[in-house]
Amino acid sequence: MGMIVLLPLGVDDDALDRCLAALDQTTPAGTSIWLADDAQAGPRAQAVVEHWLEHTALQAEYTRRARSLGEAAHLDEMLRACDGLDVAVLAADSVPMPGWLQQLQACLARDASIATATPWSNAGEAVAWPRVGEVNPLPSDPVRLAQALSGMPLLQPELPSAVTHAVLIRGSARRRAGGLDIHSYNSWYAALVDLSLRMSGLGWRNVLCDNAFVGRQEEGRLAEGDMDVLANRWPSWTARLAGFLMDDPLRAHREHLQALCEQAIMPQAQRDLFDACGFLPGAEQV
Image 1 (cartoon, rainbow, N blue to C red):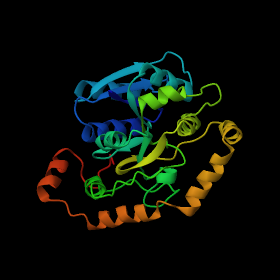
Image 2 (image 1 turned 180 degrees about the horizontal axis):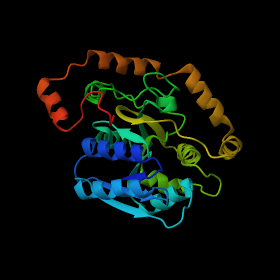
Image 3 (image 1 turned 30 degrees about the vertical axis):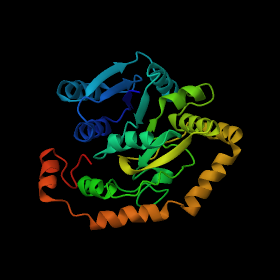
Image 4 (image 1 turned 60 degrees about the vertical axis):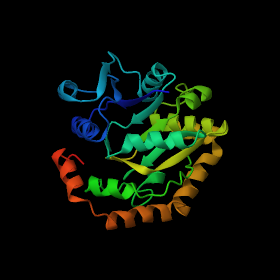
């Protein structure tokens, strides 16, 4: 089955610039990526996109709606157009780290029961690192982090639901579950939780990809009224998420990643390669 990356654009020009730069540096050349604009990007952001399209090694397409559909409805339109494909959805303010997409794809390939694979993030709620449930600073040394992630055990622990900073969704599971419920939810956050829970009810799993990381400026947000709908439809989900954040079943896993980061020593030749690509430790784009 094929795969595509979806990036719905937001209104933050600087976040878009950082995201596109990180995508170029961390995503294999030739990867299919769709930049979809729900009439959100202003003139500067559109200029950023046009310049990026002229220079990227990714197989990229850009579309812009004349009128906004709304977050969940727009993503549903994108996902329906990608029927039959596994789809990686990135938040508009995401900062992918080295190896992110390859590891997410490998996670789905290892276990046919996985419907969604979610990477670690500094602002990933249940999968936040190094402190759970917090908006941590973006990692200052992506190269060291990538080296540490390569040594992580592949436990693929189950999550309360997928998280919106980045998620790879199996196309067959998405089709079986019926896609997004755009009639009940306005935000991608709520629509993704609902989709995750419906796929779980059909026997699939929503898991953490132990060795992938995608940064983000801030956590995702629910639209007004979405939490009430989620609570009514899935009354056990809120309690499960709260229990997950309080009990922190990933604590040992996060501490293991922290220890690997502290121990990581990059071979000079490999560091020179990343530096040549512009991925300097502490660089502004990350």
